[in-house]
Structure formats: structure tokens, C-alpha cells
Length: 375
Image (tube, rainbow, N blue to C red; front, side, top):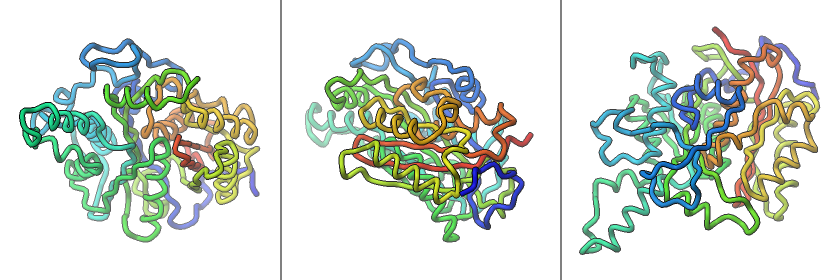
């Protein structure tokens, strides 16, 4: 295996998917610039919860500051919109439009969307169910909320907003969702089903989600500090990309921990991803775990610590800074790699490993070659 220090100008195999753009809506604020600045500074994002969020199990939260749906998207069609959809729409605007709202990325009829989530808008679903139990009649519910309760609404709304007619998919996989979505997009582009993809993952903060995570926490685990946001990337084949590549996706591997040994599962998955990419673990520039506040998350960190150089594991600040962003975490991990690499010329041509693990046993890992920010 190589040490992955080859020049990024070296020809990539035909069809290799490359990331040519990215955006983020995160606890650092709206836009990739705020995300990048916050990550590079190692800034914490936890704040005291606003009373408008409702009754919560914890007083601290990591939410997108000042995020009001109608203020950022306007009043038309947003009166009943869930927060998850709004986060995805704002992130897609940041990826495809400039500051004046003009399209800066060309798309065609085979431009698709694949979005990773956990379970859609949990707040919307629980509110709708509550109405069925508490209103005068079980069917006296707000029917206008029904579309927003579907799992694929955020991805569909993103496609409709930007006129994207290619394959539209929602992947529900918890903390590994971002990597599952990346793998899905990679496979469909390889099959010629899509020319480019908006790919990423999103998670909303809500009282319902906070209580769900609070009750699901294992005895002895710290109280969850929840975050939210959406990370999106523009994925194109290297040989037809219309924009300079920021990173090449060399491999994506998935695994299920069926032996209740997350450390072994992460190790096996990461090794498989590195082998597929032809990369030696000793040559990695960065390795970024999802930092889930669970036993699986701790096992993930231990697995990478035993596999990669210490400087690679510490080069990108921990995702703990953003809180537990659940489905959005893997996309934020990739964004963090790109943000740190942008400020480090020495990253050009090097490789990075991104991994994620969920409490249900899902494990995923991806290997990226950093091509360097083009200005």
C-alpha cells in the first residue's frame, strides 16, 4: 500500500467522485465560513436554552443561533414547515446560490439529492400524534402538517426548491447517515444514474428529540448535549467535474456490529476502507471520529487511537464542540476536515479518515484525498 502522499494533480481513476463544494448550517451559524472559522478556532457552541424551545432535560443546547424559519426562508410556504426541512433548504441555498440568490452551480436533469436523517422531524410527528389524543376528536388534527411528517420531505423539498430532477433519496441511519448518503450517491453516479449529487445529512433540535435522547442514554453516560444542523456537499465524477475538486472520495465502507464489540467493528471497517483506498494508516493526515457520547462512541475513539498516528487523530478539533448532532455529525466531520485542510497547505495531496458509529450497531468509514482549496 502507498502512504497516500501522491500529488493531488495525479490522475484519478475515471469516475472517482470528488467534492467540489460544500455548505453548512451549524451551531456556529449559517454558512461554511462561520463553520470553518468556528472549527479552526476550536470554539464551543453550548448556550443556555431559550424558553421558546419548551421544557428540556438539560439547560444547555447547541442550536443554530437565531434560526427562525420564516426569517431565513420567508413566510411563503413556511407556516407549518418543520425545522429539519428548513435546515436542509438553507444549506442547499448556501451550496447552490450566491449571496444575492443567483445560481452559481449548474445542474441538469440527472442532478440528484440524497439526504441522511435519523427519523425525520420528531417534533412534528409527536405534535401531530398529541393532537390526535388531546383534541376533541382523534381526527381533529392539523392536516397541513402531514406532508412534513414524511421521512423524505426534506430531501424532496430541497429538490423542488432548486428544480433538481435526478434521483431523490432519504437515508435514515442515525450518526452514520452522512456516510451512508455519501456511499449511496457514489454508487448511483458510478452506475450512470446521476451526473452530480447534493449529498449530506441533517438533524434538528427539538424538545421531543432532547427527551428521546435523555431517556435512551445508558446508565452512567453523561446527559446528552444535543446539537443540530445540516452539512451538504456537491459530489461530481472527477473526469466531468465542472468545478475544482476539494477532496476525492477514495472509499466508503459500512459494517454492522453484530458481536456487541464496537471497537472491533470500527477497526475492521476502517481497515477495510483504507485497504480499498490503497492508503496506509500511518500516512493519514487526519482521522475524525463522530465523538458520540455513548459507549460506542468511546470505543470508536479507542479503535482509531490504536490504528492511526496521534497527530492525525488530534489535527481536527473534536466534534464534541458541536454537541451530539446525531444524523448531521458525519457531514460535519467531513466539513471540519475540509475547513482545517483549507488553512493548512501541507494537507494538499494527503488523506483523511472519517468514521461514525451508531448505538444500533451501524458503523461506517470513508477515506478522502485532500486536493486543496482552489481560489
